Length: 343
Ligand code: ADE
Ligand code: ZN
Image 1: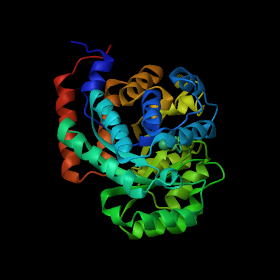
Image 2 (image 1 turned 120 degrees about the vertical axis):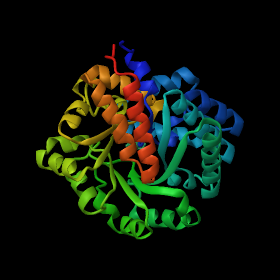
Image 3 (image 1 turned 60 degrees about the horizontal axis):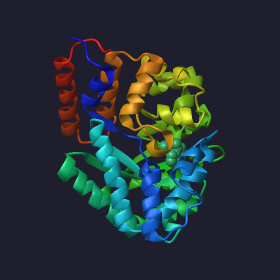
Image 4 (image 1 turned 90 degrees about the vertical axis):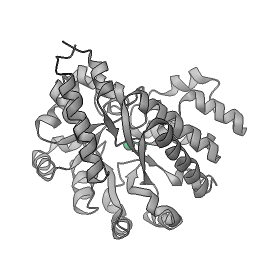
């Protein structure tokens, strides 16, 4: 018996490994929080916000993303933001998430680090209790700021370091290579934390190489432009490096012109340990399930590809081995239960 593609993917246990919690701020919640906090937005209404989401590159998007974050002021705001995301993830059949947050976006506006952390941590507890969704936090440094500011942020984060799964690097990629943050990530690794970096989203293959050779990353976020360099592709495949790829983000930020040009199928065929993720779904028009389904249709992913992607999302996670194994066994049981073709 055949099964509808979106039903099959919804039922497939999945982890999301590339998600900026600030990028889940839907225009409706943006307006609600603006009213609650007495913040004036530069938009007349929700439709005007949506109309502004027409980006020609990463920086276009980041300008709006940082402006939108101005409505996030209290613990309750961060809690509500994260809970809204967890509900959507749960509805999409996601069971685990490793989410980025950008403390500098908030502390630079005078929002205390503790406010951000308390709001996010209480939502993570609630998601586990009420939805059965597990979540780890990844603190991200903004790469358009200096390495010294990243060190300051690491010092401020000290009381919460044991609550982080890892530390990442995001924001404007071009002109801010991984090597700019060599010393601070050496310190992050010394603290026993995992290291991640956005690399090869807009930046060249050399930025991916720097992330490997200088930051010694445990995961690459995006990695698309590695595909321009066959030796690098082979290296990433041989070392089993997980790439957290975000197809609808790539489309909205013009990393690809058409979803049919997306490299996901070629990545899998090259043996890359790729995963599918939503990045900033409120801005890019689709959460985890839409990323899987739209990509599957656009580049003709097979049923086996989809199962492989779900498996990669857990094997590439930072969960302990016993939890990875439990999730992988659930995927295999699910795939065996629905052996039919997809339609
Ligand atoms: N911050 C939020 N989303 C991002 C992305 N796709 N690339 C770089 N920085 C980001
Ligand atoms: Zn990202």
